[in-house]
View 1 (cartoon, rainbow, N blue to C red):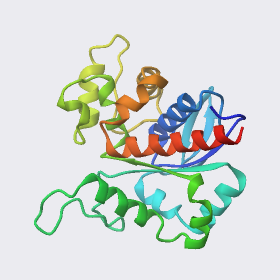
View 2: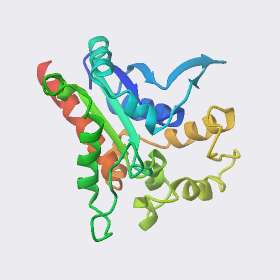
View 3: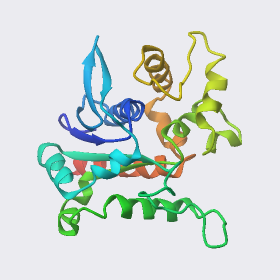
View 4: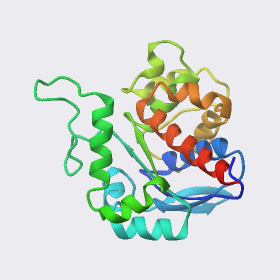
Length: 234
């Protein structure tokens, strides 16, 4: 675990991604962490974090520039950049999901191209000097897909389409009226649903459930490397 409280700057699509990253990082960290929510900004309302301003993948891309990275890493130990792949083939994102033969590209190739796209406005020298402190959370196809193995053990566990619907099918069987809305994720009902899901994640289970989604697995590998390096220096 980290020898002292580590600070993580977060650039992500929205409040559901923000809450999810906070919870997963703290479970892997095994101690309290400090979070600086750069995009979207959050504020406390009735004891809960709520999103301020707009979110989405366009905002993530606009925050990926040298100045944003520089300030994030000047004031924090690490920077986490999250983005979904569901609309990565749209402009100005511009990452193709299929090849010239209209066949699906591999997750690894799409992942690499998305990293390149996120870094296109970041000074290369700055990135090379700080790349061990930058963590990417690339969600195939959205962060809700990361949670499917908590509810499914068949092929649906690795699905990358219709993930919210699949989760809602199982959430509807639980007592508590849990449901993930397409909109209104700042609301109390949405917040309680994500809290219910995130409580199901145990640290010991993270390596297993992350293997079902390529982006989740890469995120966990980066976090493990950070923890390993810090342990070496203790």
